[in-house]
Image (cartoon, rainbow, N blue to C red; front, side, top):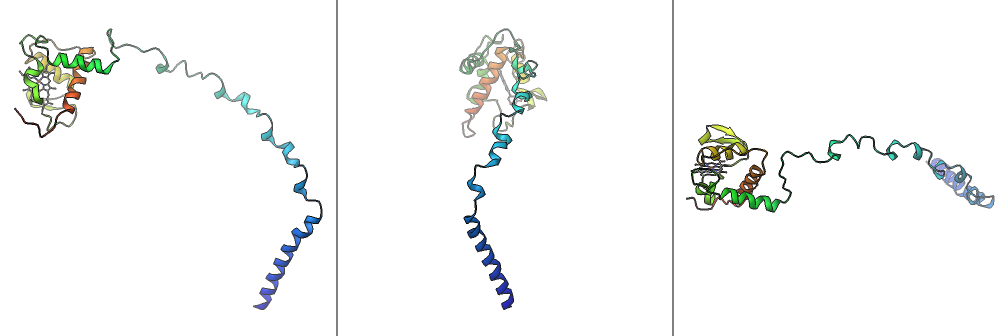
Amino acid sequence: MSRIWLSLFMVFAVMAAVPASAEKGANPCGMKNPCAMKNPCGMKNPCGMKNPCGMKNPCGAKNPCAQAPKPIRKEHITDYAKLLKKGEALWNDTKLGTSGMACMSCHADHENLNLDTMKGWPHHVKMTGDIVTLDQMINFCMINPMEGKPLDPNSVAMTAMNAYYHEYAKAYKPSMPKK
Ligand code: HEC
């Protein structure tokens, strides 16, 4: 046991002595670091020139999103507040169909919109005997109770009807009195 301690002591003694004697000689770290000269990172990066990403992105031209917008209709709208106003006017328009009624004649106070059971579109609407999208439901009511013409799905009018429906539905609280 004591032999081990002795040999351990000697190892430490040698380790402690080495740096002391090395300090007396020329410290290699004290010299101008010879590696600094050859450091490839210090040179102008030769890869920088050949980096294909540094060139004009050749895919940019083909990216369809980078091209000018392709309209889906002649009339455009980019102002959401304006779209909502348009939608509200349409939902209240008694001249939209020929029956003299407006959507709001039957849907005021969220009436007949089944918002208690609403789980997104498309869904089953009893009156249609079918699963329909919101666009299809709007057109169902346009043709039937409103006795009018269906709206073009790509029209600003249809987008506005959609926008107002969602805004109107958001305001619904299940505690609201039903008529
Ligand atoms: C004469 C009354 C009447 C008019 C006018 C009317 N609707 Fe409806 N609408 C109904 C009824 C009743 C239902 C409920 C159908 C059901 O639950 O089976 C309904 C259902 C709907 C629904 C679906 C509700 C659900 O279950 O998710 C939407 C959306 C809708 N109407 C939009 C409109 C729009 C837009 C207009 C105007 C273009 C309009 N309605 C005009 C009577 C009307």
